[in-house]
Image 1 (tube, rainbow, N blue to C red):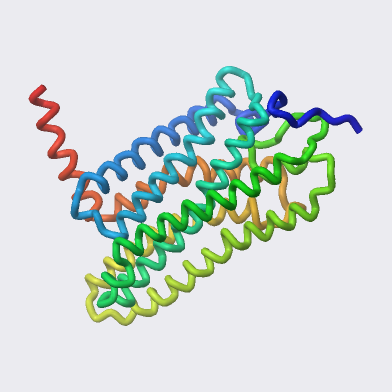
Image 2 (cartoon, helix red, strand yellow; image 1 turned 60 degrees about the vertical axis):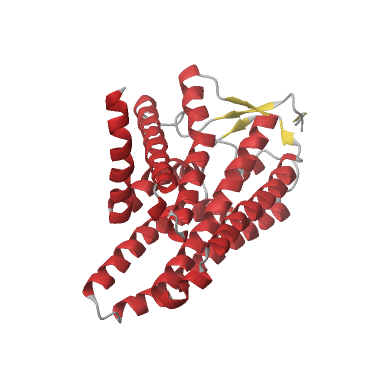
Length: 315
């Protein structure tokens, strides 16, 4: 079997969902629209949380980090995919592929952990309200944020280096929208079964364990909410938690399909759809899910924009 050198001078050809679609121009327009929606909505949410002092509390600091991760994640994937389609050039260098894989893994894993910390924050706020300022102090909140970024980055660095050390067969075509571990391993010339098991265990650790913690937190929250004497308090808690659970379902659904479902159940088309869902669709919808049903966020948005609009009108 011939090999092509997997060096910095070599590259891959990304053949993703845009190339295999029956209506590629329409799909490209939809993906572009979702990207600009993600930029606008996440950018606004970050601006509001940064500018409004009333939102400088753990719940919204964590939400701001989620918006930052979503903004970066979709920016790692979407612009290149759209530009490649428009220029009819789907090549990516070996180094570019490694960097894209690292960033996608780091941001995705950080979001997995952050969503679990957000569930814990809601558990403490609803089930342990008297201890909230102790259990969820600003110091604890920033420790959670730092833990998400650092652990995710270290894990992503290790898996990216290990994946790219393989020799790849002469075919350079990756049947995926971007560089991700499962599609790349299909090009490896060596036996990757043991490493695929490691990737599977990573998926279980980074996805299933945080998901289990989230489900446990919300089971306790639901029990507490159902026993609340106040209808208004019960409604507010359910609205906040339902928004979070919607985001959790969208994110973990696509990511679990990619990294936890055994490889024999995968097809390139399904993998592409799954990846598009959690790297492009979910980042665009997350801020809308949180903000449209949250009076504090919508109120803060009006206050921040209200302060800025008169300044522009006077210029």
